[in-house]
Image 1 (cartoon, rainbow over the protein chains, first blue to last red):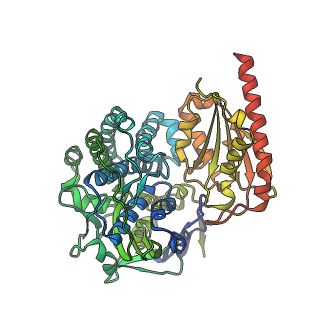
Image 2: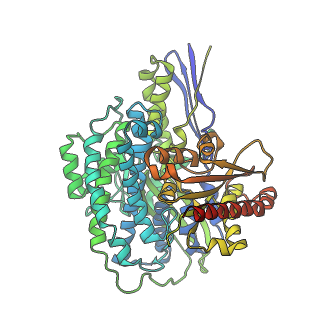
Image 3: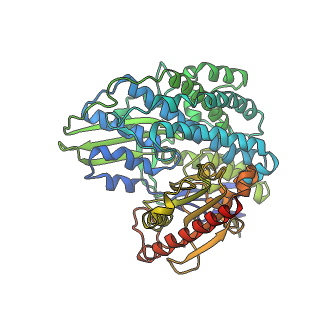
Length: 428
Length: 166
């Protein structure tokens, strides 16, 4: 018996993804997560651009995580120029990142993955039976967008972050005016964790190599050292000596593997497993009360990791907002020189690495961007391979849904589209 | 006076014809500054608004949306849809946003009575080149003045209707 599950193209947005599973005698013969999204297109047209344009150009790679692209790029370029930013700048960037985690995680938890776990086809169906849940989800998400707007002028593709700091300090009043909503969000995020652990997750325990940034003093999001659960830590500058990209025929996105050829996992599970001791106090408490055993190795349970990170993001944001009182200049003036620099931060979907070479006039000579979804693609395919023995006996619709759900649990950049997959089974 | 009518251009400026909605609304603001600057009227150009679109509709009496669409019409064709027609669009319409306009409106109607009551008109500009880095196609560029004039007519119609009511 040969069975083929095929999703020729995702039916929305850039049409950049598809899923193909070919089974033979109940075993996976071929598995591909096809991605047509071309982030490296950006690397080409960054060449010759002035370095200060880079954060706003790279932000356009993603509508959900533009801050991640800005944060990794400014750090890489500041490293190339030998600039040290002020503590105030770092904290404001961290706050901006909280906004992005809030909007991205709230969206994914409630509107993209929860419908799978609750047996609903979409968030619309979920809204029909549980309008209050979806209303709260939208409110949770909006608070993140409002935070981004208060700091960066607009909620999608915010502007203001620049190489050296910020173009100007955002006004204190609109940021502090968000405190009541942030406090509501913190309570709602704690409730989200309590609810998340009650959901019925498919059984799938896998042996992952987790890779994430790490800091001893805080839950690493903005910066840190590159940690792995299976190898020694390296600096961000050494990242691309250990984690290598390769081209595979079925994907326009490069695939990443470790130097010894293994797939690895970036994202919320990796962060939680490597960095749970650095979570904010209430996030740690929520983790403890949920009785979750770490390391968490079920990809479907990334939702729980996101819920705990949502608590961390709200609690961290509240502290940063309360302490926000900027003084002095918002940026370090640029002293241009030729150089090469790397930067990395933790996008909601995982580690995002940038490297740039610039000339003495500040023009970009070379750009390299390694997005989290591309790093996770080989891992996603391995996960699907492990899933096959479990789904091969299921009715086709259920098997398809379980496979799709696995892809969605990764929250890839194509996750909105994967909610509208159409599948075709071929047998001969 | 608070705005009661919102004109929203939706799209992505880096994806060829997907910028049609943004460009049409900007052109409308330029060609009809008197209407566009009235206190009852607010104009927005939103790139990838996703679910955030609902925040711009909340509390509005009327909304006029302009977005690029894929259809069997020739490129540059302009179509007018009511809210009921707009939500019938499927994701296969491939509007180039993370959370499609149709799904977002459906969700808004399900959750927020104020959005259900909003009189919404969507102008769809048929495009044919949506790839990253593409320019606006000549057909869509030529359609922009017509789209701007249609927006103007619609805004004036709503202003008149609300004035008569008050």
